[in-house]
Amino acid sequence: MKQKLILAARDAAKNAYCKYSNYAVGAALLAEDGTIWLGCNVENSSYGATNCAERTALFSAIAAGKRKFSAIAIAGGTADSPASPCGICRQVLSEFCSPDMPVYYAGLEGDIICTTTLGELLPFAFSGANL
Ligand code: THU
Image 1 (cartoon, protein in one colour):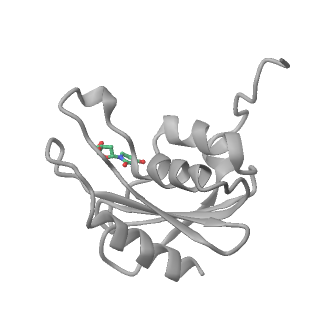
Image 2 (cartoon, helix red, strand yellow):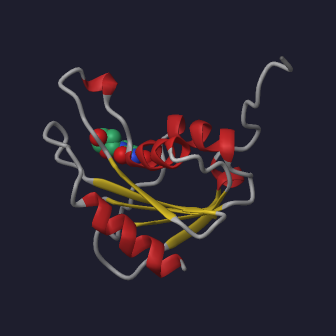
Image 3 (cartoon, helix red, strand yellow):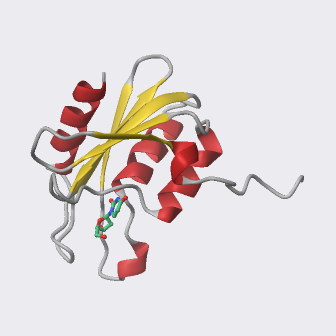
């Protein structure tokens, strides 16, 4: 599954809209029902309005009614320096995904796949103000 998700994320990176950074990222999010949701980064001339690949994938799954997820793969950068999820994406993923959810990330090419968990990437995640 790890390999399959990374290949799907690499495919999704081909749709990246990244004319400002020229840094393409793709994400493949596995829902608990086995469906895979793809995302790419979508940049904006107002740079801060950019949406990362991980959030694109998650929001697309959420909009389709999915709420439970088993793994995510991210593809970006090089084998030597692969893209790992940014801080905002870590927090947004933590809204829906458990700390032990596997996170795979790799460069756009190459055989090396890094494996971690959401909890390792974002320990002590903020989870609300007891509202
Ligand atoms: N980017 C992602 O899509 N995901 C990440 O986890 C890291 C950064 C995008 C945002 C921007 O379009 C480009 O990569 C360069 O920062």
